[in-house]
Image (cartoon, rainbow, N blue to C red):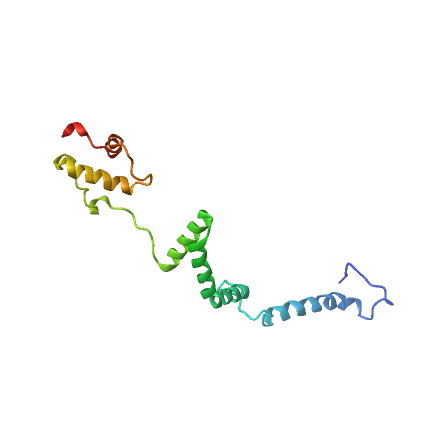
Length: 161
């Protein structure tokens, strides 16, 4: 049997008939050792090394936030109540209400009672004047001096008397 590579007699102490066998044995030993050796990472093939999928950092950060949650909540509430910027105030209020479990509900018009119709024509002149005075006192501009302006602002039709 001839081998493609014949080493020089002085270069190797392995006889030419055993050269191929000597080259194959270390490679075979490595592959066999790799196949039967336990894995270095500690988990079995097909099993995840991180079954929860969360890192240690995630759990550390979560513990820190839980420890400071009372102070954070107090700061959020204070900011929601005292912020000068309405955008900041709005976001903080919504965050506080969300964490309190209070959610806005959709309006159902069928549950709302109908507004009663107010018929001012059944009032006497004196009652109408009292109503004008009360409404004028409640307006942000304060009471007006001219009675005709007041009746126009109230939407009262004087010709209906």
